[in-house]
Length: 475
Ligand code: ADP
Ligand code: MG
Ligand code: ZN
Image (cartoon, rainbow, N blue to C red; front, side, top):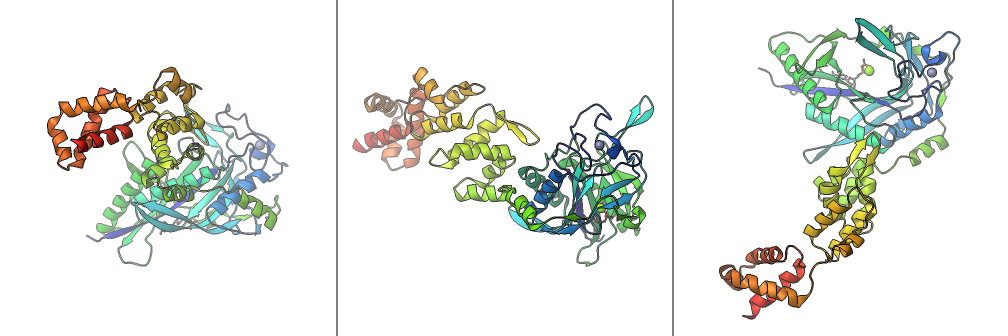
């Protein structure tokens, strides 16, 4: 048996979050009744003419810049001709020979290693409609999606495993979501991926024949489909067979891919320049304006946090959504150290967070959390009490300061009161106390824990620590 190396390149279609379609003013609203959002332009009626949506161009350029692409000042739209019931014009307006951007890259992190993979091009195109099958035996066509603006992001065949492909997709999705141009929703189809997969004997320089996989509407499916395709191609080559270039569809029920159609080549589409749209000119000022709209991207956010002491894993969790980033930055800007805030938000706040597309809803406000953590930072309440306060403020606009006052929760920092509790614990645990006296500092934590227990968590642990040390040193 030969040892094969997989070669994978992804093509992603991402919907740009404009209110209206790419070449007409129809709404892009998801979930409208079928064929509610249509007009002569997106229905392809004779005599109608496309007008380019400037907002879509801005978003597309912003996406390309976020991916490190070069922007071409001059680009052209092209007609990609094919017949399908969901394509009323009989062609899709896309970009072919001169896309508006090229030569980007993306840094993917996998198992602590960062690797740069290439992006061939980013171009704009319009979406097709949707065939709805099985309506009382009929198939119906919904053209709401026809003409919705997309960017197609064509990746170089630089990926070498299904795990890398999944990491690439996650990274790409996060960048587009942070850039504010796409909502990253695989299930609703606003972020779609086709995977091109081939294998070659390890060490070979020539690529093998590839198959294109479709219907990959979750990250898990992408990984499973690629793995099953690698296994299928390996079995064929091991048996002395040849791979046929084709488009295959992934069936999540069986975990296998099956032939959809033999692969079209570019010449099958009879691409030609779109005669109804002038060439697209992107002047320097426009491109710079788009560049100014590219926000801090997830990798930069993580680096900034890690430099301030936040553990990498926590930084990864908190940079999964731009809403999380805003929340954490708002809280940590009010505290001395961001580490407590990072842990608190990752462990407590995210549990009550709801994310949909670009919006993130929380069960508390950043200033409530900042106030709560300040109380802990100053030693006014213990970590245990903080949890109690948090449970009480969740879903309300109550102030932690008020709540702590109301419930008389401030930690006991009164030395005489705590001294009694410490003395009683020392008496109760003579062996452990002797160990500490004998130099076993590690056992001190046990005694502190016992005092905390005795005071029902209300003692100031720092003070208890000091008192116990003093008491055990003096006799
Ligand atoms: P098409 O437009 O016909 O889909 P492209 O040349 O644009 O073809 O390539 C599409 C995708 O296929 C790209 O993402 C590219 O990285 C990937 N690709 C090209 N050749 C291979 C190969 N031999 N194995 C795996 N992926 C490949
Ligand atoms: Mg392609
Ligand atoms: Zn329309």
